[in-house]
Image (cartoon, rainbow, N blue to C red; front, side, top):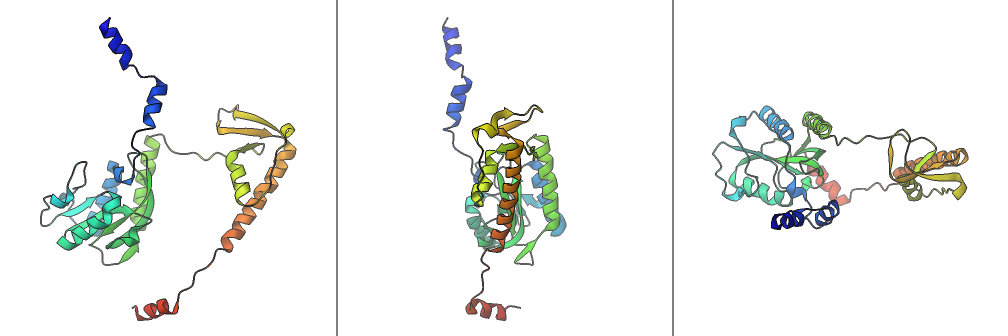
Length: 264
């Protein structure tokens, strides 16, 4: 009887598990553990481009690791994915100690890091399912900043392989003209386009007979409403294009032009 009570107490309903999940700490970019094939792509690239021996590569950034007290061999190269929140501090540490490195960095803010920038700015899906725009910083390059098309393409291929294996690849569905979703109304509102549906013009539906579910529910609409929808979509696209053209083009000051005149 006692054992039965224990078993009953240990059982967790689906609702309870979902409730508990809400209070678990959210993953950050510091929790972005690198898929093996992504790391291998980067390591191979570093070995080829900088003519480095992969057996000399070290990875001091592991759970519980201490990169400041890591035992770095004299001829090692740090090729690893550090916590993005302290990547500037890390780069300064390696620069001061003349330790070669090629490390992952946040793509959108990598120009702030005191290092040479290999700018791929590719959105990598990490092991925690976080998608982060990623570039790389190093002290081994001869350029202050450069693009890396070959590395970008290799990362893209490896990332696509991971998405396929995890069955998380997103599929863009072309919905029939007589279907509307809330996301479509968002675009109409965003670009100042009025579009409406009367009660008699639409029927709420959660799933199409083809088997495709409509996230957040959608509406099947009449042919007359579908014609207005098509016109609204054209107008939204036109206004979006016009808004892009109207974006302010920044100009340089005389001080900045003087800096340019002194550059090689």
